Amino acid sequence: MKKILFAAMIVALALSQSSCVSTKKIKYFQGADSVYAQAQRIQQMYEMRIKPADQIMIKVHCSEPELLEVFANDVTMGTSGRTSSSYMGSATANAVGNYYGYTVTNEGTVILPALGEIYVMGLTIEECARLIEKKIQEKNLIRDPGVTVTFLNARVTVVGAVKTPRVVNLTSERNTVIDVLAQCGDLDDTGLPKTLKVFRENNGERTMYDLDLTNVNVFESPAYYMQQNDLIYVEFNKSKNIRKSSFYTFLGAGSSILALVSSIVALVYTLKK
Image 1 (tube, rainbow, N blue to C red):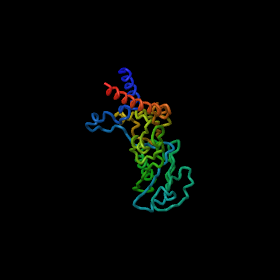
Image 2 (cartoon, rainbow, N blue to C red; image 1 turned 135 degrees about the horizontal axis):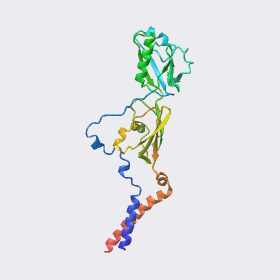
Image 3 (tube, rainbow, N blue to C red; image 1 turned 30 degrees about the horizontal axis):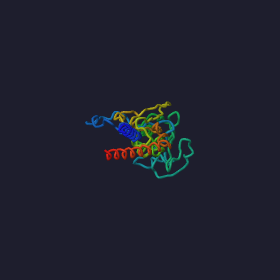
């Protein structure tokens, strides 16, 4: 009787633990307490650089609005308040919301009013703005121009084991993979934080990065800071289908019943003694 009771309790315990997951598999940033006991310098460059097919918004401004007349053929370049549409037919100007963005060609250029074709691929938006200012000055259009450049279509796609797979618009140049996952509701119950994959296109090549969110060294990954058009894939736990199957449901219920029966038998056996 003792052997049977002992065996039943062991089986019940094993079954009850079958759905448990070690915290080592799901806890983010393990080892951070020791690694970041002192401040660590951020090594990665997180600035996004302009790529083909990007859409950028360009605004020119100066202290003498009349000098912006040369750019007033476009609703985006120039802040003179005019809304002329004579330049909107250009293949490089495309509507994005209430703005007109210039699409970077496969050759890495944009064509701007009064300035012509400018090579911008590989530049940060700050570098792009300074380059356009220089071109304006070289053509003696404005002596002291100010140029602002922003991304219009910077986004990241998130698929796999997250609560809300979606396309996330990047709100700044310093969006991290954690920022993006948070906007998707974080990983769902079947997601594996140890096996995230980030696919990135750059200079005509596609690169894959493996991220382990449970490891504090994830902060040092080149893919920790997001770039426009990144694709994040969160792998599913291999037991996902088993967890959703009727067998798994039966197994869970069976373990509970067996544990209850074992407790009753143990109690009866104790009372009889």
